[in-house]
Length: 249
Ligand SMILES: *Cc1c(COP(=O)(O)O)cnc(C)c1O
Image (cartoon, rainbow, N blue to C red; front, side, top):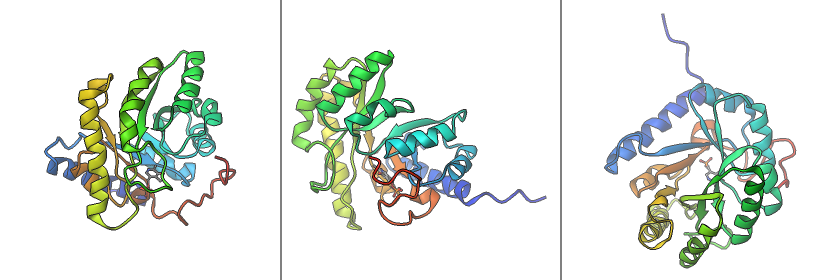
């Protein structure tokens, strides 16, 4: 008897997992060294559930409203949510209803707001510091030369657990430029391991999306954030068909 055909989502998930494992081996690491955050933005909960049934447990969203809606739709499933997009301070309360990690910490005022809420809730939060490695004005994140001073401030925030760094490379097919961005983040991490008060806690490098995650792993990524390679192309760049998401953030 033939096995039932895998859904496209399950098949794509398996393909991406294989490529992650291969790239990890090429970079001299074990095949499971890299964490795979499945980015579910703009994807309806029913399709996300297909991925969850196929073993995806580490999910990422870039909008609070949309993430909260999906977390509620998938409540009871064994999943963990990360915030990967720009976070407005006035969304922190809602964010903490579903997210256990923020990969886009990029300013002290946001750290202050999160800390206050977390103290109130009596819990902690994993955070990654977002760095603008491309230098593009359209991208969020600290400038590379601001990172160490920022890290020196973070120990004052008891509830925040800094784990490392996140970046988006320049949006270009130019492999050398994309890899340059990833190397900038890796060098920041390596310097922070020596110089920052958090020291060895800051090991994580979240870098690489559908178009560039294999390069990112070769450059040292420990976390990749992949959506379209599993769910197919989004209708338009930055467009959202999730009800209520448009302009919500
Ligand atoms: C959308 C998004 C991703 C994933 O991009 P894909 O092209 O779907 O793989 C990764 N990181 C961030 C911050 C995103 O907003």
